[in-house]
Length: 233
Ligand code: FES
Image 1 (cartoon, rainbow, N blue to C red):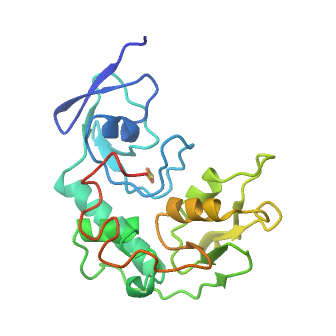
Image 2: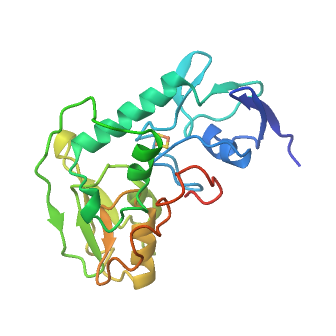
């Protein structure tokens, strides 16, 4: 059995497996580091930056940084809390997030983080971008108004030939998520539900049935995100 690596998060002694990243290791040690794009067991993208921590005075993403022996990680500090809040605010103003009409409300990780960080009025101006909804696929509705471009769907869902069911199209501010209709032709109801669950927001919605679970009884309606770190994705 390989030796565990000893490190600290905000002074708490923690242990990690060889090669484990700071984010996965934090969870194994009962410490919550906020995140949006990471999915345990799937190659990291480092795209959302919500998991920013400070190591040796430098800000780094916990999901892409391997733990090293003796590493001292700063996580829950006023500076990092404000940095994360700024990122969350930026994600809100860059999209059109109308939570009251969203099927993911209460199960949305972005909304839950906004509550956790007590977001009020964002420090950035709202952009109200023009975004398209794509309802072509038989099982999945893509609402790009809510997409935060985290790549969770691209990285998580492949067909039997290893091709991703989802892909990015265009560049810069025109970058958008698309579904590959050929690869995604045979999505089952179970898979559509899994896709909806992996999406941290309400950009990928399973068609045909909505508002199954009443608002007020959903995952984060009564329990802040991160309060049960074993149940996060
Ligand atoms: Fe680490 Fe998104 S979770 S950058």
